[in-house]
Amino acid sequence: MGRTAETSRRITRVCRAIVAVAAAGGVGLTLSGAPASIDDRPADVIRPAWSDLPALVQTQLASHGVEPARLPSFLDEVERDAAARVRDGDWDALVYYALQSRRLTSLPPVEPALSAREHHTRLASANAPGASPGSASASLGSASPSSSSSRPTSIPPSAEQRLAAVVRAIEAPPRATDDERLTYFRSFVTQDADVASRGLAVVLRDAYGRAMRFLYEKEFDAPADPAARAQAFSTLYQHRAYSTDTEVEAGYAVAEALGMIRVIAPDARLARVLIVGPGLTLARRTGFIDEIPPQSYQPWAVLNDVVSLGFSRLADIEIVCADINPRVVDHLERGRRTPSAPATPFLLVSDMPDTPAAPLSDGYRRYFGAWGRAIGEDAAAPPLPPLPERLTPHLRRAVRVTSDARGRVRAFPLNIVTQRERGAPYDAVIVTNVLTYFDDVSLLLALSNIASMLRPGGFLIHNESRDVLGTAAPRLGLPITHTRTVIFTPASGGARALYDLVGIHRKPS
Image (cartoon, rainbow, N blue to C red; front, top):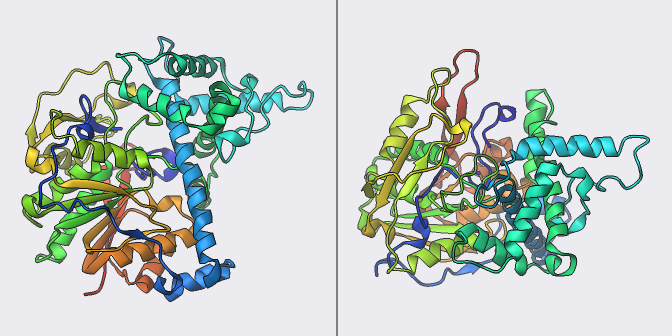
């Protein structure tokens, strides 16, 4: 669901949030078959009708020109836009992979944010008065890879060489030594109609331009005023590609929220939990490590917390994952349906260095040390190459999940803005680093769908801080009960604290 100074040091990886992944092959590819107690029927996913929507949502839709008869076509538009953003997110991952992978080429890795700044400088110079016509791309980026033409003169040579390397690797015949990422990207681009008509190199340059525009605006072009900065980021993320990245730190706020629920509702039973947008780490924006394969880990973090806090017995728990990206769903489901594959340990690497100048909080240390202990056991950590300087020194552990725990998770595709699941309600819904992608109308639709899937007395946990959520949620049947600031590194030596926010809503009984 990023951790940078321009977010007032607030840690929120948007749409998830690679720092906890399987050491080899990925737990998502090694799950045992699901026990008979897990409901294996396909999810019954429907669109809400106008009459299903609360009055507040109807009013907001009407104010945007959406009347009852137009609702289906409006939802169609939302889904088309979502599909484009999912596609753009996959192209972004390919760009970040091309810039940073050490397996792909012997060329030095390129830090994406620095590449974005150099790209912007070259573009501005080429577009300055007196520059030769057509010497730069028409724009730094666009709504989708196919909608602009980013010419190579605006791309730094270091990036241009690495983009060319990934094109050669993808267009080469498949080899047994190809890793999971390269295999996925090859499959992805060969099915893309734009690549078929324009060529991989051209579309990849366009994707680079769009990704660099987002990074430049986020890292270097935000307003200095904190309030204006927050508004700028909110608008920026409501139009960016859907990222699937995730990090181990994102689970800490959820664990703290579950701990609060244990205190305020000691008799609460959480046996059926929905995670919206569990994510999958394919190629993160920065600090990418080839040797750590793709992994979706949030389901296991939540399962561990639910068990360790005594909300339910492991044998009675069902963790259900809903994601808009079919790649995420396929990753989880392929693993669950491959009982013969051997289990491999998770490797957790903290995304923040632990230094005397900025030590990690005791609370986060305890969380990191306890991760997976209720559903697995410590394992030997496999060797890694020298990690990026920003991850050194870092916390690191390896955990092997038990066969019983591996069968408690399933996944299905869902667009939380336009769809809801019809069936047994959930005891809790967890949605972190997802709501920030939505404008206010989409946010209200998503909250309405979430409320419809919660049982009376059920809980919603999220880390979205926009005021509209706090004011609208009670009118949608989700009054807020508690909020908490979760500290990762306390303020020290003039440096601001690194923190996240978490909110708990409870549906009236």
